[in-house]
Image 1 (cartoon, rainbow, N blue to C red):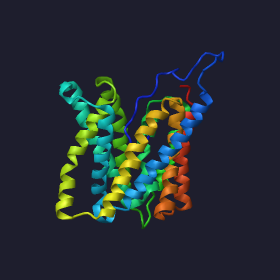
Image 2 (cartoon, rainbow, N blue to C red):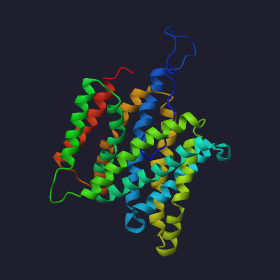
Image 3 (cartoon, rainbow, N blue to C red):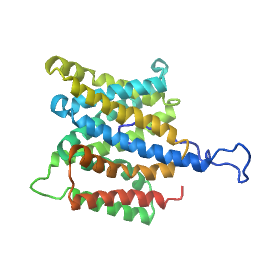
Image 4 (tube, rainbow, N blue to C red):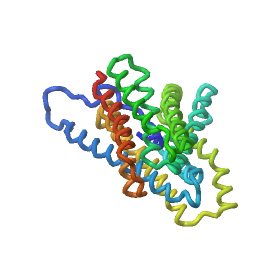
Length: 306
């Protein structure tokens, strides 16, 4: 899933397997997986479309205002689904939850700030380096070393010095990548210490509280227009609520590897949506760099044995 949607627990290995002999009433696994692929595509498209629509509110709310609204929507959805009981949390449970909340907010703020400066396609591609780096760093295979070199070449190409290069925007995209990587690692810790998705839900709630002063200041000092609030709300629904629920359903229908492989398409979807919705055109060089990073991730997952 995208940085913006909260992670959901992957099904245990073999949960999609059935006995080799067919029996009456057995589920149509082929149909389930097809439905899962369609859902994954819809989730990715929703995520990137939400980000594009949210950027339409930047002139009025700015990236921080849009992110604040998005955090509110994410908190409402996750709190409703996870139903955390924070009063029962111990100190050992609270500290990773609080760190996760901080990383969650920083991740979305840096991503949307990068989108504002360098466009949707490039920002999402740079952010995608976070989970890709974790996957490659944990491997000792030669093919993954090659994938790392391919991805590095793509990054160097994207960040090559040019008169129009926005290094701050690129830096914000890389900060989003670091935050997404931290988000993944912290979620593993939270998942081990807090039952179910209560930890992620509590983190989303705390993150929304952190952005509450931002919302108050915006309303008091810069009253938003109805249109800008509508754009931000749509971004919250499409980039938080829809991907979370879609990913939750998808992980029950497809293997985790297939899920990870399809997530590679997100930078491509971001580039396409940015072009169609926002009119953000990418040159051949940038397109090739994005393709190289996507191919590196896809190759690594496709050749893995797990």
